[in-house]
Amino acid sequence: MAKKERPKDLLGSELVVLNIGLDIFRQALESQKVRCAQVDLQEAPKLERKLADALDRLL
Amino acid sequence: MRVVNVVKQNLFRDSIQLMKLSEDVKKLDGVVDAVVSMGTDTNRRLLEDLHLLGADGKRAADGDLVIAVSVAEGADSTEVMGRVEQMVMAPPAVQGGPRRRAFHSLEAALDSLGGANIAVVSVPGKQAFRPSMELLRKGVNIHLFSDHVTKQEEIELKRFASSKGLLVLGPGAGTSIIDGVGLGFANSVRRGDVGIVASAGTGIQEATIMLDHIGLGVSHALGVGGTDVSKEVGGIMMKDCLRMLEADEATRRIMIIAKAPAEAVFRDVMRFVDKSTTKPVIACFLGLESAPEYGGRVRYAKTLHSAVAKAAEESGGAALREFRSKISVSFDALQRSARLIAAGLGRRKYVRGLYSGGTIAHETLLIFRELMGEAYSNTPLSSNFALIDPNKSKGNSIVDLGDEFFTAGRAHPMIDPTLRRLRLAQEADDPAVATILLDIVLGYGSSSDPAGALQKTIEEGRRSAKKHGGELAVLAHVCGTETDPQSLKDQNAKLTAAGATLFKSNALMAATAALVVGGEEAATNLKRKWGELLG
Image (cartoon, rainbow over all chains, first blue to last red; front, side, top):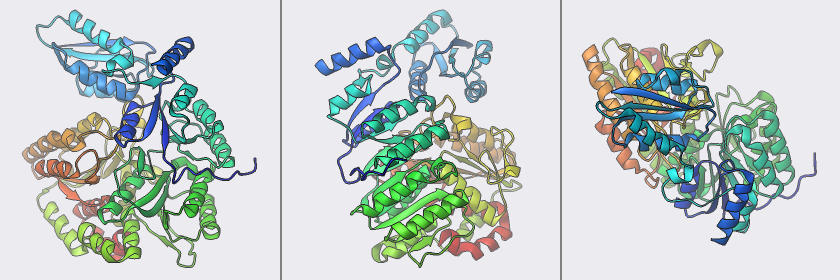
């Protein structure tokens, strides 16, 4: 096994969250005023995904 | 009325989308009732119970989507089903009303935030490994809500994460609270100095709400998933979380909550506690028969109620007074309450627990074993007491409706009350049932009105029981706080109005139920074990 690195400071840091999957958990995070982004990995084919993400960045 | 089933082969929608679709379809003109669900065994049975299963639906497979509609008399079923199908086949973003911003790649999502330090992953278990590993490689911690991740994948994720100083909370991690932020199903609880590491989701919820009620708070509560303490996984994350809580300045004492782990893992974890931590520890290993002592720094608790009692004792002062006045009751008071309930039951004799929380269902099974003998369950303590068909109770039964048997292809009962509502009606209709136990779990992610969803069924069940002779006693425990998104006060009021008797902890509810149906023998046992279970 690789040598253990020093733990990152997750505890005590502001949480910034990716929510991958159920949207209720994104809603719960937003209601707690947590910075988060929703990821849906299976809705669109790859090319469409890239296009949608590019549009999201522009909008 | 005419029942129409349409089956869309190999079409997947997640359980929350399906629940919302079902509600939306029900609102359409010409629709009397409707369910849109995946074609799993549980869902087909549910459709049958609701009289919504047709010939096409019966043939559906797990991966097929079933649209089951009861069309109103005089309505044009072709036209109605056309509108329903259009709604179901629309892209999920359209179904959800105003478009929510969702990314389709991890990179784009991370870019939008300028990086993230944790990801909540709740995709189907078979799809969870890849994005989780990709994110770990980018230095992002994981809260893995998904079930059905293989042990091999869990070990790979956890070994990698551990080597990088990262956390993988889960798989099957229902709840975590980090710096006051609830991930998954979590209650809104006050901040404080108790750091929790748990391989038991509703165990975290039950302990944190009780701490909150008595004025104590939580620094962090880290849910590592039930299989972390299995022999194969070896408690990798439980030990890493203990290390993090030991180093964390906001944490002054530690609470460990788990179903009794494999013996070797238990010894390993407790050795770790002994050698690598210095803070006071309360260890609640549910079902543990005996435990080593570590110089008084580690105190063992047999129930979640008892774990919080020990935290109150350690704190002393206001917390102890609050525990005594708000949660604790005396043996005599509990026995009086049980006798009052038992007096109206007539010839009814069995208890049926319909739980949404797996850990507290397990706690009830353990309390029953201590007081009156083992109960049947779909998650039994020993195989002799396994329910052959989890859909049918037998004798005294405790059913965990959040177990995978019931949740395949449908939302967890904390989110969707439909399955529990039907089961409650079924149990209430059984003239041998004396007492029904319900846990109502509030918090982020849970149903917006779980008590309201069951209120009418409780009322009807109690009314109908009277016709068969004897009262049906409904006992309930609301696992929630005043600051939860659902108001604790309102939820309690709805249950009381329906005729349910409320309890401040699941352990108190379970002990009362045991006295109600277990009589003098249970009372003698409880008196003897009061300190262990409720002290």
